[in-house]
Length: 136
Image (cartoon, helix red, strand yellow):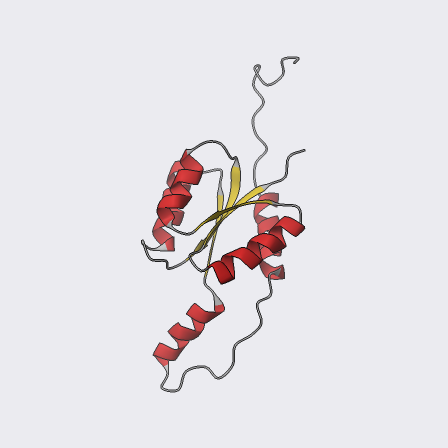
Protein backbone atom coordinates (compact mmCIF):
# COMPACT_ATOMS: atom_id res chain seq x y z
CA UNK A 1 0.00 0.00 0.00
CA UNK A 2 1.33 3.45 -0.95
CA UNK A 3 1.89 6.03 1.78
CA UNK A 4 -0.57 8.90 2.13
CA UNK A 5 0.69 12.07 0.47
CA UNK A 6 0.54 15.34 2.41
CA UNK A 7 1.20 18.74 0.85
CA UNK A 8 2.63 21.40 3.18
CA UNK A 9 2.21 24.99 1.98
CA UNK A 10 4.43 27.23 4.11
CA UNK A 11 6.93 29.90 3.09
CA UNK A 12 9.09 29.65 6.20
CA UNK A 13 11.60 26.80 5.76
CA UNK A 14 12.20 26.74 9.53
CA UNK A 15 8.56 25.78 9.99
CA UNK A 16 7.95 23.72 6.85
CA UNK A 17 11.01 21.47 6.89
CA UNK A 18 10.83 20.18 10.51
CA UNK A 19 7.12 19.45 10.10
CA UNK A 20 7.78 17.68 6.79
CA UNK A 21 10.53 15.57 8.34
CA UNK A 22 8.32 14.68 11.31
CA UNK A 23 5.50 13.54 9.00
CA UNK A 24 7.96 11.53 6.88
CA UNK A 25 9.18 9.76 10.02
CA UNK A 26 5.52 8.94 10.73
CA UNK A 27 5.23 7.21 7.35
CA UNK A 28 3.70 9.93 5.19
CA UNK A 29 4.94 11.00 1.78
CA UNK A 30 5.35 14.78 1.92
CA UNK A 31 5.35 17.42 -0.80
CA UNK A 32 6.51 20.92 0.10
CA UNK A 33 5.41 24.21 -1.46
CA UNK A 34 6.50 27.69 -0.47
CA UNK A 35 3.77 29.61 -2.29
CA UNK A 36 0.20 29.07 -3.35
CA UNK A 37 1.06 28.96 -7.06
CA UNK A 38 3.55 26.17 -6.35
CA UNK A 39 0.89 24.29 -4.36
CA UNK A 40 -1.54 24.55 -7.28
CA UNK A 41 1.12 23.15 -9.63
CA UNK A 42 1.62 20.17 -7.31
CA UNK A 43 -2.10 19.44 -7.44
CA UNK A 44 -2.63 20.15 -11.13
CA UNK A 45 0.40 18.17 -12.27
CA UNK A 46 -1.33 14.90 -11.47
CA UNK A 47 1.97 13.19 -10.60
CA UNK A 48 1.08 12.90 -6.94
CA UNK A 49 -2.14 11.76 -5.37
CA UNK A 50 -2.26 14.38 -2.62
CA UNK A 51 -4.75 13.49 0.07
CA UNK A 52 -4.17 16.23 2.68
CA UNK A 53 -3.02 19.84 2.29
CA UNK A 54 -1.65 21.73 5.30
CA UNK A 55 -1.88 25.42 4.45
CA UNK A 56 -0.46 28.48 6.18
CA UNK A 57 -3.29 30.99 6.65
CA UNK A 58 -1.18 33.89 5.38
CA UNK A 59 1.68 33.75 2.97
CA UNK A 60 3.17 36.21 0.51
CA UNK A 61 0.94 35.48 -2.49
CA UNK A 62 -2.50 35.41 -0.97
CA UNK A 63 -4.69 34.06 1.72
CA UNK A 64 -4.53 30.47 2.84
CA UNK A 65 -8.31 30.63 3.03
CA UNK A 66 -8.48 31.35 -0.70
CA UNK A 67 -6.14 28.45 -1.50
CA UNK A 68 -8.18 26.14 0.70
CA UNK A 69 -11.39 27.20 -1.07
CA UNK A 70 -9.73 26.65 -4.47
CA UNK A 71 -8.61 23.16 -3.45
CA UNK A 72 -12.06 22.25 -2.13
CA UNK A 73 -13.66 23.49 -5.33
CA UNK A 74 -11.23 21.82 -7.74
CA UNK A 75 -10.07 18.78 -5.75
CA UNK A 76 -12.93 17.89 -3.38
CA UNK A 77 -11.30 14.65 -2.25
CA UNK A 78 -8.27 16.51 -0.84
CA UNK A 79 -8.68 17.29 2.85
CA UNK A 80 -7.42 20.74 3.88
CA UNK A 81 -6.07 22.05 7.18
CA UNK A 82 -5.37 25.72 7.86
CA UNK A 83 -2.78 26.75 10.39
CA UNK A 84 -0.39 29.45 11.48
CA UNK A 85 3.05 29.34 13.02
CA UNK A 86 3.62 30.27 16.62
CA UNK A 87 5.50 33.35 15.43
CA UNK A 88 2.57 34.56 13.35
CA UNK A 89 0.12 33.94 16.15
CA UNK A 90 2.39 35.84 18.55
CA UNK A 91 2.72 38.74 16.10
CA UNK A 92 -1.07 38.91 15.72
CA UNK A 93 -1.49 38.76 19.48
CA UNK A 94 1.11 41.52 19.83
CA UNK A 95 -1.00 43.71 17.57
CA UNK A 96 -3.94 43.23 19.91
CA UNK A 97 -2.28 44.29 23.13
CA UNK A 98 0.29 46.92 24.09
CA UNK A 99 3.04 44.65 25.37
CA UNK A 100 2.39 41.54 23.34
CA UNK A 101 2.88 37.98 24.55
CA UNK A 102 5.74 37.28 26.94
CA UNK A 103 6.66 33.70 26.00
CA UNK A 104 6.59 31.37 23.04
CA UNK A 105 5.90 27.65 23.24
CA UNK A 106 8.03 24.96 21.64
CA UNK A 107 6.35 23.58 18.52
CA UNK A 108 4.48 20.32 19.07
CA UNK A 109 3.64 18.47 15.86
CA UNK A 110 1.57 15.74 17.50
CA UNK A 111 -1.73 17.66 17.20
CA UNK A 112 -1.06 18.11 13.46
CA UNK A 113 -0.48 14.38 13.06
CA UNK A 114 -3.61 13.56 15.04
CA UNK A 115 -5.70 15.93 12.91
CA UNK A 116 -4.35 14.43 9.67
CA UNK A 117 -5.35 11.00 10.91
CA UNK A 118 -8.83 12.27 11.76
CA UNK A 119 -9.23 13.82 8.30
CA UNK A 120 -8.13 10.62 6.59
CA UNK A 121 -10.52 8.55 8.70
CA UNK A 122 -13.45 10.56 7.33
CA UNK A 123 -12.61 10.13 3.65
CA UNK A 124 -14.78 7.96 1.46
CA UNK A 125 -13.24 4.90 -0.20
CA UNK A 126 -12.70 5.27 -3.96
CA UNK A 127 -15.34 3.81 -6.24
CA UNK A 128 -14.19 0.69 -8.06
CA UNK A 129 -14.97 0.61 -11.76
CA UNK A 130 -14.76 -2.26 -14.20
CA UNK A 131 -11.37 -0.90 -15.36
CA UNK A 132 -10.02 -1.17 -11.80
CA UNK A 133 -10.84 -4.87 -11.57
CA UNK A 134 -9.05 -6.13 -14.67
CA UNK A 135 -6.18 -8.54 -14.14
CA UNK A 136 -2.70 -7.18 -14.82
